[in-house]
Image 1: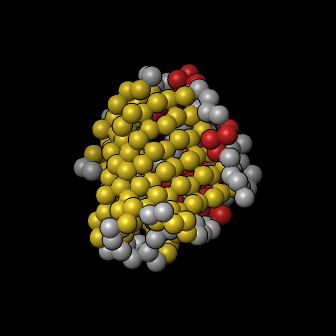
Image 2: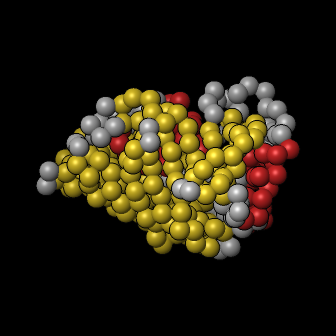
Length: 255
């Protein structure tokens, strides 16, 4: 059951020598930055916290969950997830701080082993978190970006930007609504658990919708995640706070 929850952290919250962005990709990102609230606002609020609730499959059954998420860019987040499995209350806490990661699991009143996770997947999660702030994508020392042409997202045309984070041999595709400039989808290949808990490489697609302005920044309040084209998780976000700074103690990874 442990692997289901790493994916939540990756959802919520992009090798080698960096190359200059191609002009088309750069234009798409600049349009998206303005659509999401402008560079000043995006750079001002480098952290945040929110509540969430939704459904994900556990042991082959759609299971309701609730939780809280706190993050700071780049590469820091903490998530608490609450579910009920076979009549038992389960609490999962995950903390990621750069390349440090810890998960604790409590079933009823009993602590159980949280397990470890693939560090490459943690790095990708950290890169995704930073990429979704948008402004870092224009820094050629941190990301390489290139145009991926156009695609369809939920019946609307979207412009695709292919993102390669520095030092990570993985491509991330970001999809921006051609009309509004809003980022409506992110996709990458990675290791994740299926409904039966078994880990395998899948195409992970994250869709964002129901945007709401928070402190001048457009935030998606509905998230849907697909694995290999099939719906895996849905979640709604509430009580969203954007923060200029988050105390580092919130992301302390204790041995």
